[in-house]
Image (cartoon, rainbow, N blue to C red):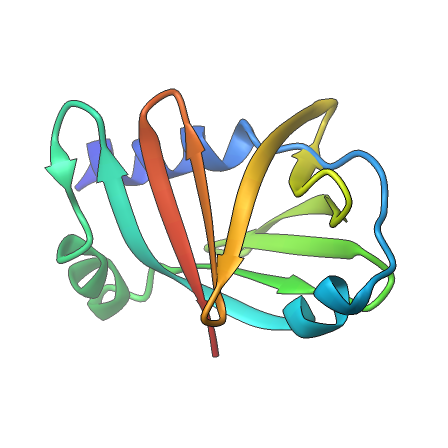
Length: 120
């Protein structure tokens, strides 16, 4: 369990936001999201374990605001993010990763790890 939480925290800390997009894409993305999918390059699909984490009160969520900023909340630890809809990136602390947004789901991939967040 500690390894999974450590993995999630490591993935979260790699995100960084630079820039801000003001478009219809951003308007569609505004809202609250919760982690619904997680694939580790070494351990495979860990999505089913997310229910176990939730049962222990552990969660990873984020909220996108209409100004292009976002807040990632990992069990109370908050990280400020920035959404750039023109470049399709989410960034924090000087690093940016590409995202996809489809069917109210935002997905990222970084170093083989994949995370999906579904709009609440």
